[in-house]
Image 1: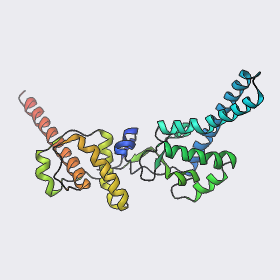
Image 2: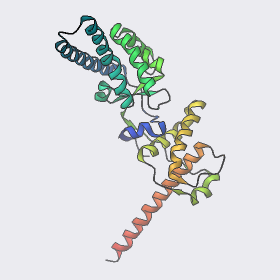
Image 3: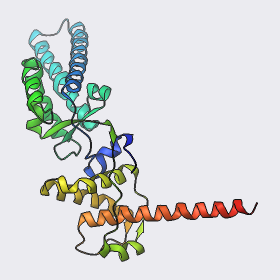
Image 4: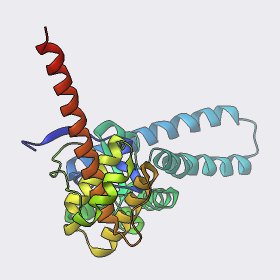
Length: 269
């Protein structure tokens, strides 16, 4: 490509094949702190509102029952609600939504309920109980800006609104040229095609376990758009390169045919 392509990644970009916007950079310390302050303000505001409403509604309630209810409400606001939000939005909180951040797994895949719960539980201690001091120094010293909850959950936070530079499109591997010419390969969704190109461009820099796992997941998702499947024993990377390369060749050929047809029609006038 002639230059970087500016794009805002979407949920499709990040979640494809469990998968991967490999070029998304870790969030900076400043953006993490700003996001955290927004989350703390929203959480405390919600907690105050809920407790005030509960206090008015439980004036004549038994004190022991009221105390138990207050604890339950506090846990709901501090733990249950943030965990549910981060799980349903695949790694976003109110602060992260505002600043274009997202929590992802260490392999860049989307977080699950377990990841969100671990991050939230430890966050209550390091952010609310200890006033954010451990979180600040942990993020300051971590190359990926991880707080303690990220280390425990196996996650980190990335920026999702960044300029992305895509690698050059791959060529169809020589031993798959015949199969690719005969295969029915439908157009890949934009997010999936982006993830495949990023993976193929970065595969050599990934550790072997992540390279194999991400490649297998992407190949599984791409296989839904291909028939027949590639020859037995085909490596996921070769399969992905053949699909992406073949689609590019077909799209270029289609555009050339359309341009030639337009030229013939206009030249007759």
